[in-house]
Length: 340
Image (spheres, one colour):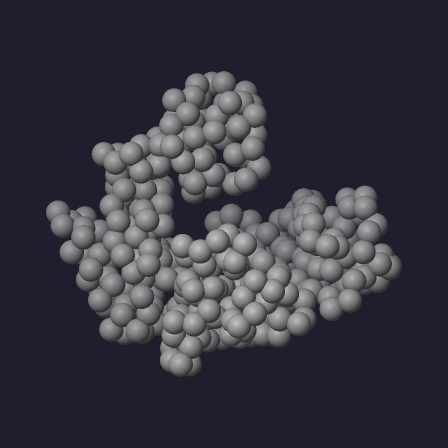
């Protein structure tokens, strides 16, 4: 189950007059300031329109304003999204299925049915009645298939993706169309002459083990074949980490100040870690240089910890891995948790 344009949809429920308009949510809602798009309505995403006019998450707000000058810009309201998400998941659980929450707007639902489309319609109707939010439902025989199927059901639709139509739907698509395969992995695969899902599915697992590692290589092939052994669980959703970041309205060229900003962010992250009561195992620092080049560097802690001083030191150690001392526009610190 994947809620459609969730953040924007929550905002439109509060402001019905915005329905059908290009709506962009990000930062404090001021496109004249630095910040990035958190979510955009389908109208703003330019479905069916030229790429040069489309808006997507992560795009600078100023760029979004240039592309769609008449768009409505709104600030991020995390409290409202938390409340809406809780209502959705409560409605979903009321159906009696096992539900695995994956975040604000997404969940896996374990359904054993001879008519999964009927179950999907029931899910959509129940969520719609309780929250007035639309969702898309993907049907598959495992989590991988169901997850990818939602993309083909959007908006507010239902799509079944199983072994029977897997290659018909995905075979000619690039490898990063698969869940879990990002741009860098896709580029590395392309360097090996593997640039489609079908090509990856027919690749030699042993050869890929040599290129990606003994676990990752065979996993890539299995994923391209639509195979996944992960089961749906109703264990409470736990974040993999907590992060804080800030975008500066004026570039920072003084790296002594950059270090102080990282210290401040690390202290805020340490407070989040303490509130979660889960020790951090790795600290990651994000730096976005001018104009928009973004890099991350990580530091593995000697042992899991919630100690603010250790988290701050880890953030500074990660920052020291950046060799370029160019002006920056954004800094971020993230603490990653121990699995479990």
